Length: 336
Image (cartoon, rainbow, N blue to C red; front, top):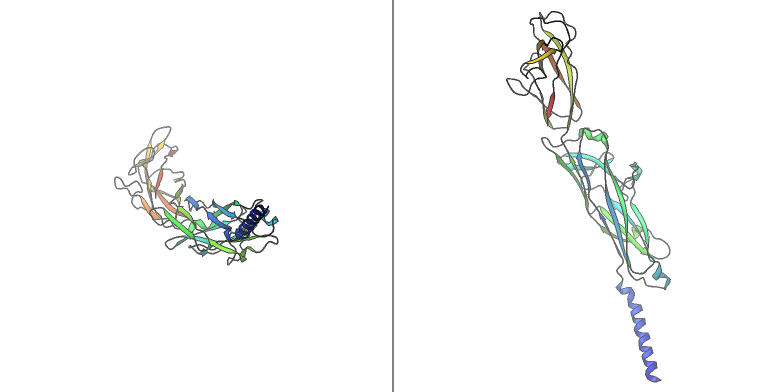
């Protein structure tokens, strides 16, 4: 019987040693990852909010927990994910992406209400909130991941003043590294504050490509009722142009339906008769055209808001044709 007793004691001693060392082998930890938030082809003249999103993941790995056996079944972790302002800083009530000296406002939100109280932040950012949560596993070993959709918005009200960088698209950027932090605590029993635990950092970027964009709206150049053409007949109209701030643009006018840019004509649809006329951007200035036959396009720089250009129309003295309606359609083309 003596050898059997010694063998059992040896086995018991080995088990106690293994149980006592389990706490030394723990590797409880959490980490966070965030995808880049990308705003593509942002038109600064759209005057509408531009939305995007990113994906935040918090992964916690559970190992054996020391203590009484029930603790092995219910390990818990609480965590908070804090976010600073990013490398672009702020502009007004918003975070900012930057391109050179230009700033593009935006913010990141924990939900899709886009309310000021839903701005992802916490910590040093006043009136903002972190992403937070708790994880529990029913086994002593393993990893759990919680996934969050982070909403992002560029406010439309701020877009008109955004520069594109001139004659090309502009890339705006704000980077997060040390100011994106995850704090977490593993626990049993009473839930502690996540700010009392371990802190780690993660990195991501917020990027936007602001495009050069323009829209043009032309009015009607109406000469009105006219009798005999013994003296010049004049009229004006407005051509509205809205282009990205600091973007160069030029507008050309074609020759209409019945002539060329240098020799436009209105036509009587009934008789086929023609009345020559000219268009310029200044009173009696060079003919506004496409750059051919002595005509000139009109160039300017966008301001982000609508700019009104004046069309000066003139019908020179000439033989008076048959009474009737004379019309032409001219196409304006904007290059930017």
